[in-house]
Structures are given as structure tokens and as C-alpha cells.
Length: 401
Image (cartoon, rainbow, N blue to C red; front, top):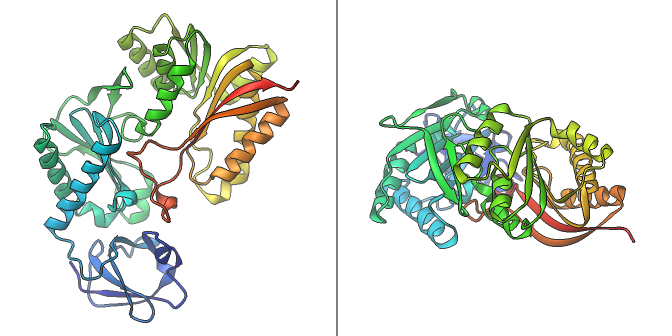
């Protein structure tokens, strides 16, 4: 803990003052006192008004990430324990906790930290130097709190291998925290079984944020012919199968993901309903349109086409193209599910893109649902840059009359 005081320039700190969590390097007027990178410092406005405490890192353009808006709050063991307890109590109230995200960075007031629970295994992702210093304490507190509810964690794996760590002056890392264990973990979500690879799977091993969106597919799938694009490890496809689909075709460009998806299908006894194909969806969809393929339900769950403001224009073209082709594949009266997981493709732009795609495809859309990420990935208002990213629509598709 440092007693250093960071003073903002006059007129700066707009993000912080509106509810955000970050202070950028070009917003700072001065730093008075000694500190080491990763230390907690006090933040003042230009006129000396105290704005809270956060951890500092001179190697990052995100110079300070706030931990509290109370400048007199000590960031001690009791403080950390209470924050962890608050995060777990929230999840117990809003989601099935057999597998869930327990800590979601800034939205849980732990900037730069993600902790996912897969059955009795925790997977940790630390993306900021300051929170890295609290990482082991947070994990031990979490294990203690879960134990109070009769949940014994058998292992913890760290997936701090994202490139963004390099911007913090940190090395990328993945490995066990504590004893080694089998990193292929079986979970059950919405009644579907999955084998989650926490060591080599994408992100922390599985995309928990689509949990309730996948459940929405079940009730629409009965008796349907379904196309699941960008299936990854088969989650939407398997929910469709559980819902009673007569046939599901699931496609992804990754051979590794498709092999995992096939294993998940076998695990659930759905191998006779779901067929998997390794293909580039962007190239495959227009070919299917040319071949006059038709489905009762089409699902598009692409990776983020843009991860910065600079590539939104190109990403918009990509989203428009896949949605146009996807809509053309839907039978009259059928259903269409589509989403974006990019923060930078905001609600207004994504909605506009879908409308344009429908017009081009000569389809009319009846909206059934609009959803975001599951509530274990809470959206913190006024800090949505760090917490709001997933937009998910389900429509009924009718031809122009």
C-alpha cells in the first residue's frame, strides 16, 4: 500500500466521474510520493477533491484501475474478503452456480480479474498488474466461502495467457495454482453435458455467457431442421438436440473445436441427431444459399469481428453479410438467432445491421427476444465499456408478402 497521491489534470477524468473504473496516462497532472507499480494509490481531482483508490502501473496506458470510490478505505484482507463474498452471494441469487462466472472484472469491482467455476474447478484470468498482487488472496477467500456452502474446490488453473497482459508489462502465463489435476472437466448446463478443457480451450475453457440464450433455443427446436454456425464445442447445437430437433448441422472452422463438439454429442447421446462439419462459415453460407438449402432454425454465434473502434466499418460489413445469407436460409415462418460478442458493435449498430440484412434478403422479422450476457456477467451501468458486450436476438422470419 502506498500513500502516493495522483492528481488529475483540470477537465480530465471524465470516464471516472461518469462511473468508469479507469484513469489513463494522459489524464494525470502529477504523482506525489513513492510507489511501486501495482501499488494502491489515492486519486484526487485537479482541485484536491478525493476520488478514491486504485492500483497504478506506469507501464500501462491505463495508468490506474480503481478499487474503491472511498479515498479513506483501506484495501486490506477484510475488504477483499467482503468483495469476494458479495460476488458469490450475487451469483447465488441470479444464476445456476454449478458452473458460472464468479468474478467479472470491473463489474465486480475487481479490475482485470476473471474467475470462472466449472463444477469443482476454478479458472482464473488476471490481466492487470495490481490485481495480480491480490490474486492468490482472492482465490483462497473464494475457496473458503464456497466451502461454507459445502462446495470443495479440487483445483485451480490460471489462464492469464491473453496478449493484453503484454500491455501491462506482464508476461503471458498459464498453469496450475496449487496441486495439479485433470483439466478435462465435465459440467452440466441446461441439462446438457459438456467436457470442458480448462487448459487448452478458448478463453477459460467454455463460453458461460450464453447460458440462458442457449436455453431459449431449446423451446424453438422441436421437430426442426437446424443450422448452427460457429458452433465451437457444440453448445447451441446440443441445446437444439435436447429440445427435440429432428436434425442439426453444426459448423466451425476449428478442427479441434469440432472434435470436442463431437465428443460432447457422444456424451449426451446426440450423435445420430447432430452432424458436425469443419468449414469456413463466411464462405459456406453463400454456397448454401446458391444450393437453395433451407432450415427451420438458423443460429449465428460468430467470434467478435472487431475488438477496436478502428475496425468497426469492416466488421459491420461482415455482420451484414452473414446475417443476410443466414436469413435467406430460413424457411418461411422459421426462426433466426443471431448475436455479436463485440463491445464495439453496439446495440444500435447491430440492430441496424440486422434490419439492413433483412431488407436485402427480402425477409420480414418478428422479434421474439433480445438478450444480453447471462447475469453472472453483470453489466455495470456507466462502466459498460468493461462489462457490456453480448447482444443476442431471436426472430421469426417471414417472407415479404
